[in-house]
Length: 136
Length: 107
Image (cartoon, rainbow over all chains, first blue to last red; front, side, top):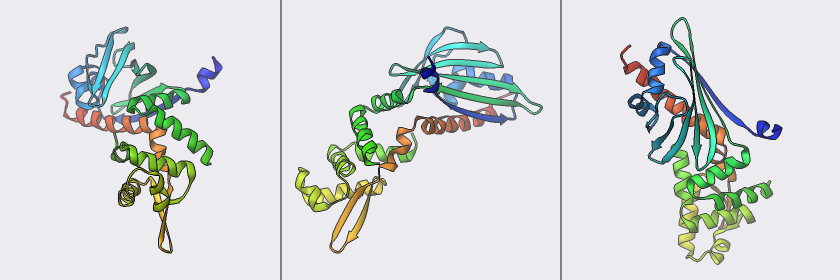
């Protein structure tokens, strides 16, 4: 259990936007709007709803985990069986919204597998990794 | 995918070129002649592949008299093997687009 926690990695991006949480929420949850900035999807703001994002490079399988309108949205983000979680947090400010995106996932060993599988180069990169480890 | 990633993947998609790069990673610096001996293609073809690898930042060349020695630059692969930096780039780009969209949306 401890290992699983220490092996997690996160990407956090925070932005101050000059728009109300309600408006940001719409952009995060209405499929025709999501498509304009992220990808095509059959998203619904309903916990437990399974959906996917479809990009020109492939699909991401997702399930909605948390829906707190205008405040918090979380969904799983899985590609090739390896899961991660994307969490959006909206906090009203005097002039708009503080938007926080956290993407938490993969253990380092899985990242390698993920990347290799994603590009169909698992063997190549695995081998390369070994070579690189020896080169140092 | 950022342009730099595109270039690296395009460069390494060719099996002959990839084999040359792997050899340089594994065995260290080599001349075009030494690389040609074991590549199943001609010396001009090997030189051409090395040129493409160099363009993508994957190899470096060093002139020594009339010989050119090539060595791998494995650091060039770092952006591909680091999930955190790759996802940061992904979300930064998409959040820029989200902000553009918010400006266009009605209140």
